[in-house]
Image 1 (cartoon, one colour):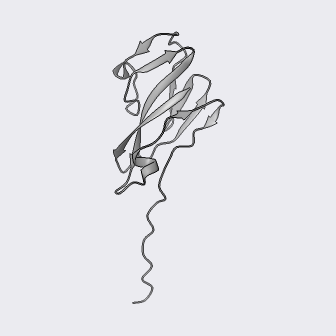
Image 2 (cartoon, rainbow, N blue to C red):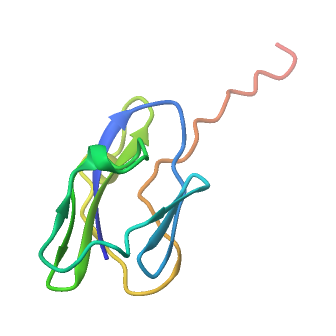
Image 3 (tube, helix red, strand yellow):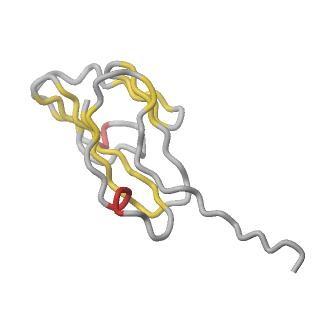
Length: 108
């Protein structure tokens, strides 16, 4: 499976895991096993707002585009992410920036 990412300024988070042709996106299970080789399914045909492009199976490999939320001033790795090629099952490591830390002003 190949996941491309479309960065977008958002305050929510994204978690993804894979099991075969099934993605779990923020707890929502999306079964893509019914897409045959050479076929394309428009993003609007999939009931998941995180999938933002057509889903295609090319030479046996599913290609999916997901939104990638980020905060203000994302790092280059988040603003311009490279596609992720998945070969195994489990959680998907997505590029992210550390959460901003609040300043500790002590007893000023």
